Length: 635
Image 1 (tube, rainbow, N blue to C red):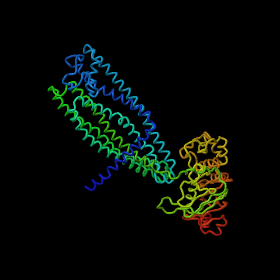
Image 2 (cartoon, rainbow, N blue to C red):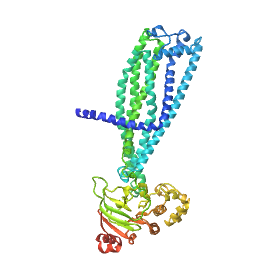
Image 3 (cartoon, rainbow, N blue to C red):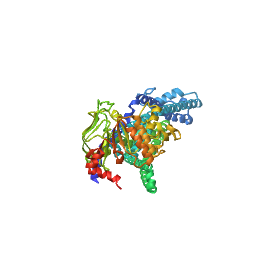
Image 4 (cartoon, rainbow, N blue to C red):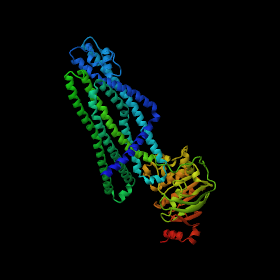
């Protein structure tokens, strides 16, 4: 028990420091909106003034209605004036100053007329209070939504620029959850706390100042509850932060399961796994339900707890102060009524600050998850003064390239030496896991080499500006990625200023024009999510049309005809030949029949080049290539 307590004590300061850093980091997003925040402070100042006045004015109305002599004739009793106090009290004594000036402004010949002026004054006070509350709320909302928009855009931009290795560490559903759910949690927390953090402390200070000027003795009695209440609320807030993080983790799990099931719905149905996926989803939602319930239970506890403590103090003040007033001691009945009303009023912003702490803890839990992503460095970027290379003139050279996916992992590629000359057609063959895809993924810098270098025309690709490097290449993958957009926009994806004629020409060369024109809106037909409204062969031809339109000097081609029917395969093969004309091509071959006419075939095994040459040369001397060839063509 002692050890555990010591450990918690040791870690507590660092946790508090970490929390403050996260909160200050969230607040740093307010800097661009300094002018709007100044407006918020101005409107908040006037709101506090009129809010205080609206509460203070209740007592004079009661006095005007129930006192024996007219309010107009009432003067400050001598017993209420401290020694040395003049007839015009100092502003430091807010209560006496207000009483003197309200009498001067509103006193009339009889009670009814005084009451009428009091009512008019109260109406104007409440009207101005609510006017400034609205103006403050509007500009606070403007700043809040701008801040949330800035964080969301920054997070998305940071994620989208990460290398492929980043997306292997994080599930898609988890990233979606952080960009949506965690941002929303920060939004709710900021939305509920930003106004309170500005307004409530000022309101409390002003109310407390009035209470002290009315009766410092009763105010000290009332203050006894605040340390107890504050300590309990702080304890609740710390626990709430931990539970809020668990809630966000559970919703991430739900998003991940949902995304995987919908993306792989064909596999789910093919294996009749609907019940299994349903059970898995229900388990995740049950975990989320329990986490949320614990969070809500704790969150809802703070307000009734602080209110109960507050009412307890009110009862003590009423009992103690009321006895003194009835005995003609301490203060007048009007001031006692005013004291009680203001004391009740000050409890609301105090309880509100308790909720503020809870909201901040929720924001900290989600903010921590957001900043974990933002603090993940983008490891593949353009170097300073990188070259803007716009052409490919001579060769691609792999020099002693070794690669591993993690520092402590095994080498996936081992000391690769390879030269690809301009307009050569190079094919990569080998068993699954030999390193073919990794070898081509290094060329556009989806990953960076662990050792060695890749050069284009003698320039290390790490010294070429990343956008310019990737513009030199067209990539046709086995898994075709289309977006929920029109056919024309999918063909021209990432490319600007292309005419419809150029898009149609690319479609003709890709053998896609005829089927596109048969679609309901032709080139303006929306293909659906991931292009699911098109067949596999149609999607592949759209992908080839995209590469043709880009017209890159270097083509990376991952053959994808093995699962297509004969007609689609023939059309795609013809489109591929159109695409490969007068280009440097590196192909990953799944069907050896498609690479027989390649200029050179590279045989990879276990991350190393074991042989290379033409089809005939490799058949005559390479046992590995001959084995792969016979595996496909020998019955």
